[in-house]
Image (cartoon, rainbow, N blue to C red; front, top):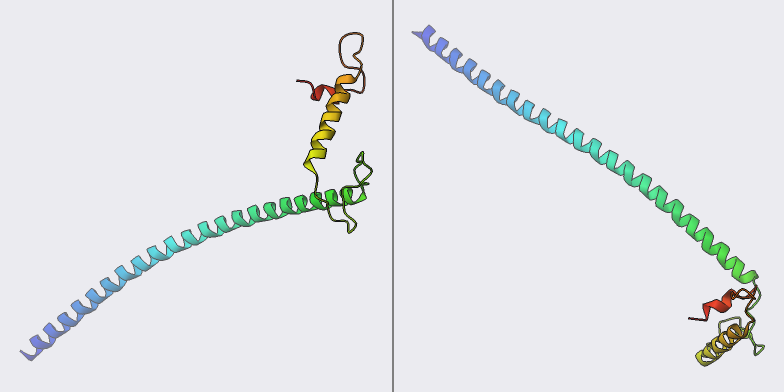
Length: 140
């Protein structure tokens, strides 16, 4: 009977080992599946990051080009002489800062320009005289 007890105990231990092995195997399979999913997600995120980096590089180059255009434009403005004003005054103050503009003068100058445009002679075929393209802008 002693041999039967030991044999029963051995069978019980083997059953426990097999059950533990099955549990570990199932856990291993779940972890492998999760690892595979995480690797896939990681690759997707890397691809997304690469796309974002490409977009960022493109945006940086476009912004750089815009800044260069603005700087070039600022240099042109600095190199261009002040705009002619009929009263002989420039459009900047003594410190080089812009003066406030008297809107009434702007409208008067526009009226004068319109009068000038309407006084330009017509060509023989009924069109505008050469050099008076701007005159047609004031006629409606």
